[in-house]
Amino acid sequence: MTTLRRYRVTAADAAAMPAALATEARYLGYRADDLAKPYASFFRPDMLPVPERVAEAIVAGMAPTEYHVDLNSFADELSKPGYSSLEDGWTRRGGTTYVAVRTEMPGVTAQMWEWWFGWHSTESARYKLWYPDAHQFAGVGEDRSADRGLTDRQRYIDNVSYVDEYIGGRLQKLAIRFFDPQRVGLADRPGWTHICARVGFNHLPLVFGWLVHQVRPTESGSEMRSRFCLNDPAIVRLPRGSQLAHRGTGLLSAAARLGLESPSPRLTRRALPDSIGGDMVYHCSKEMNHLASLLPELHAAFAGTP
Picture 1: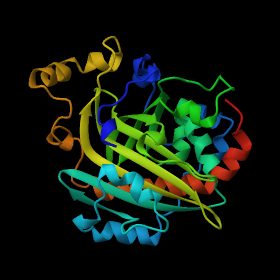
Picture 2 (picture 1 turned 60 degrees about the horizontal axis):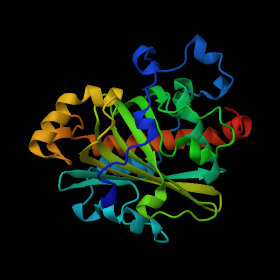
Picture 3 (picture 1 turned 120 degrees about the vertical axis):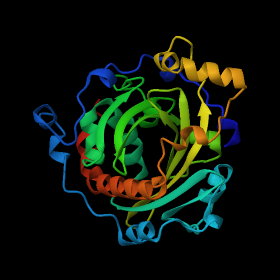
Picture 4 (picture 1 turned 90 degrees about the vertical axis):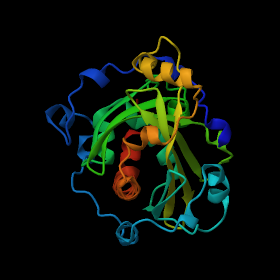
């Protein structure tokens, strides 16, 4: 993944940010307008608890540093058969936090997840289906839903999802930039998929994390193995006229004076609390388990619709 530390800017980065990012009201749950959506019956505020093994991992705290997987080894680690030493938990080394979460998903297929990532970002009400207790807002850099000639994957690859969500009680305003898994050596197999993204802020041209979700088949459906590398910051060299680049003029000027491309992790540490490891284990497990419980029905009802 070293070749990706300098993010490759896409057309979605250069596009105007969604107008709703500045104007849409933020709140948890559904209101009258949300309840009028055709998929509103899938909004289920009573969420499933995290699995016992995940709860135990959170209580245990930081795992041994030896379980840390470097960003460059994600592809090798996820390509091996069986399971890794750390499938649920977190650890920290060299300033970066590594998070691993496994989600069992009976009745769910990899294709359903491809559809979900291409469908959910265009409306906040869709995003809230995923995690009713934490998700507030979603908008997309390029709304490709009208082009029915695109595959599910083509709707979100090289696109930017702007989201507001609570992680561990702290509201995070994020820009999630999805890229082709092949760029990091993750090749899909029949019944498998990988979702990869560079994560940053939606108010600065600064990224600080990586995510990879591997979905592979099981006897009962599939399982998702999620991996995060957090506090690995880099400056995104966006087109000069883009809104996000304009907001980050001061940051970019300072970085240019210092000759920085990848700033110190201290730059983003303040935005990522010390509890981020355990917070992310809980957050990821909670949202993936919840959505997996309704995804087969949701996909059957809305696959093939804008």
